[in-house]
Each structure stands twice: as C-alpha cells, then as structure tokens.
Amino acid sequence: MAMERRLRQTQFSKREILEIVNDPNNNPYEGSLGFRRPFCNALSGQKLRIVLRGTSALNYEFIDEHTLRWLYLGKWREEYYECYEAAPNIYFFYHMHSKSIPPKMTAMCLDFNTGLATINNAQIGNDQYTPRDTSSRIVFGAIDLGGELPTKRHSFTDDFVGKVAAWKIGDIWLTHHYINPQFFLNEIIGFDGVFLTIAEPAQYVKIFEDIYVFSWREMAGPGLMGMDVMDLSKMQSVGLFYGISEDDRLECYGFSRKAGKWLSIEDRKIMHKEGIYSVVGDL
View 1 (tube, rainbow, N blue to C red):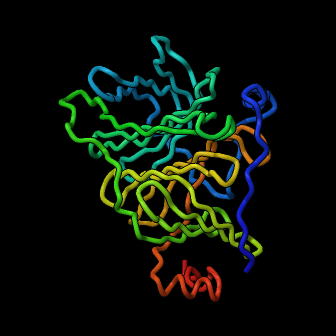
View 2 (cartoon, rainbow, N blue to C red):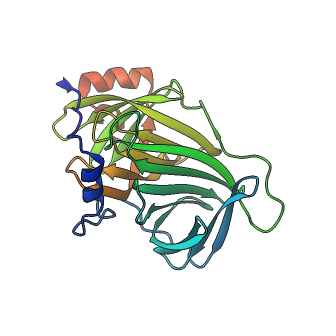
C-alpha cells in the first residue's frame, strides 16, 4: 500500500477567514462522515448553571431541541445547538458563538451521574500556527443541581498511552496510536487502501469508568478541531468537527464512531500485511 502524508491546506488572511465564516450560503451544521446518531432532546426545557471556579459560571437555558440561550458578558444570547447522548445520563452538546471575532465554539460533556462537566472552548485562528487553524482550551466544572457542589472534577488522563485502536467513521477505517498524553498517531485507511499517516496534538479526559473525552487538531490537514466522547464499553462515540474544511467552508457538525476495536501487536502485524478488514471483519 502507498504511504503518503496530507499537505497543508491553502492559508487565508484573518479577513478572508471572516468572509468564509459569514458566507450566507453556507450552513456549517450540514456535514457528516456518513453516519451520526439521532439528536437528543434531554436538555430541552432545562436551566443549567455550570460552575467553573470561584463564582465564575456558565448559565444556559435550553428552549427546545435546537435552541438555547446563554449568558455571555452580561447579555443573553440565543444560539442553535446540537446534543447527543454519549452514555446513560451523559450528554454531549455544542454551539457556535454568533457574531464572535475571532469565530468561536463551545462543546461540552455533561455527566449527570457525577454532576461534573468538561468544557472545550475553541476558536478559529491560532497565533502559534495560522489564521486557519483551530485552537482549543479544555476547562473543568460542576453542574449546579441545587445541592452542595462536588469537590472533585473531571481530569486529564494518560490511560490511553501505549494503546492502539481501530475506529470506523462512516465508511472509513482509521487507526489511533496513542503515543503520549499530548499526541497521537492517526493512520487513516481510505477507500482505495491508501494509508495517510499523521501525528497530531491531542488531549484525553476521563469522565467516568470507560467514558473519555478525546480532543485533537488536524495539523496535517485543514486545521480542524475534533472532539468526541468515547464509550469504551461499547467502543463507540459521539463527537464533532469545527473549523475551516478542506473545501474552504465553515464546519461545525456531529459525527459518530460506529465501531471500534483495541488492536494487539499481532493484530497490527496482520493488518499491515493483509489489510484492515483482516482484523476488524467481525465488527
């Protein structure tokens, strides 16, 4: 099989990025990798306060399945949002920030089993790289459910380090080599059998037993940020991509890893000799 690495995408100025983001003909929520779970309506009608640290908090009102209001800089803003059930009583939702410069998005994993939350704040434009790349920052909080707030928080983890998994997204299989707590090696096996091998920055957060948040940036591609909530008991996940796509449009859409499998050293030897389906054909 041929080996190649994707090249960096066309770079744009900050002004050109804003023109792409504000394109009235583009719906950033339209997009997929061939499969996504049905939307979840569990947050509809709820008012939530997520405490970050001290008196700092995020305030949300979920009007219906796709409309929320949130308090930002002392003013209530209305936004479109999407929500998925990642596991029982664990929800993943995200929304863009309207009229924000630079363009921003917030994605959140809410764990009602423990009352804890992991928040990922992302923006297009990263001074360390290019105006096209998406940067993000993960912070931790607790859901104010009316009682005493829990003292613990979700936290970064190295549980994945040294492991290798095969994942199916849409009709594409890819292999993740989790090489350390800040990076992973992404080996994409496309329709024509070509391998695309990419080392990318990543973050790992433990939510609950067998439940993890995984976030990364496609540095060898268009600079998109990916984030998903993995349920390792089922080897499935729900997630999203945010940023400027390979075809130069704003994207903020959900996806799901349909199936996955931990790969042994023997599996990997067989895979590289006989192909990915030799080790995942039963999934």
